[in-house]
Image 1 (cartoon, rainbow, N blue to C red):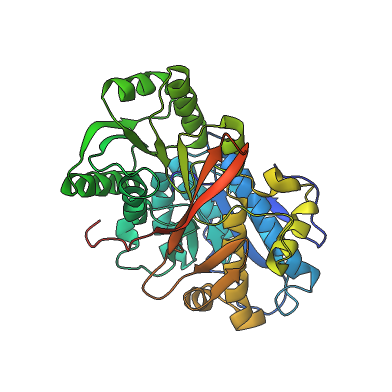
Image 2: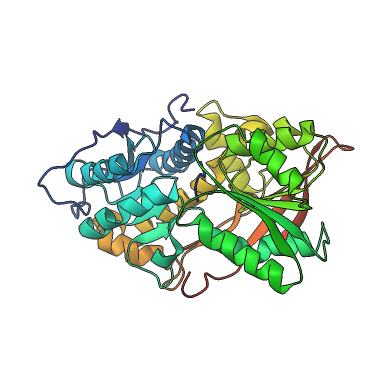
Length: 406
């Protein structure tokens, strides 16, 4: 996705976080096939820049997952070592960053950039060195049909078409003739979603009255005014959290109650509590985690995050932490398949066969040989003014497969 996801104290287990310089060398990548020393996992993303808070959440989620396996000796004695590289959310940096991780740090796999266009630029690098790459999101053309080594951590926006229209036309909004305003960051992954939503709304008797592909600006007060003047009775968005905050607050300040249907990783529990906007309907790839749950998966998650001084319902539900934790668990389970002798190639094969179930954290995180994106359904959340808390409205919002030709 275009976004999707602050480093604190060290985890219980030994966990090295290195920072690779952006650059390249003549050495080969693809991960080590030796059976000693750590497995190096990369993260090549905008640690600084407009999506920095999302990436910090990703680092926290990965560290939490890695710390648990390292505390028990690693993968057949091989610890997991996260090596990070800052792309600053710049495409050319993203290419150089992943190249350096592959050639200088000999990573076996990597998490990619958050913004789709930047991670799209990293795809040829991953293919060149045969490194499984988990993008935040990527052009759906890379996912249908599947391509070796190319995955998404959050999913593909276009799979939210049925979910968004189900919320608009069914429960809870029940708009039979929707007048939709589309607000989104222009990218190769966002445009297919907005096109698909527009087509489905039109087929069902509604129409798109406003289409606003915005740039990098964070202040959307002007855009909010345009939404109101368009006569829209619902907004669908695919923007970064700071932009959503501006849009929500601008609409509220103008006295508007136009509902916003938010894409599945734009907002977070923390932002919903901050905004307290009952007109915001947030799709989510996974349930918000209840720290009081007795689920062993939740308790492991809570304990691992506590080692980073992250606690409480707001802290553990920080932007992108839980979903990246699930993605890291998927990598861990794939590594366990081949044990101490994994290569990037065997890891890629194993990734397509593992399924991670973390009750209370993520109901089903898995890839298959024909599906390299994880989600199958979405949760839907809203701020309840009467209860003064975030409440779950639905846990069955449908996902859809990536259409051919997206």
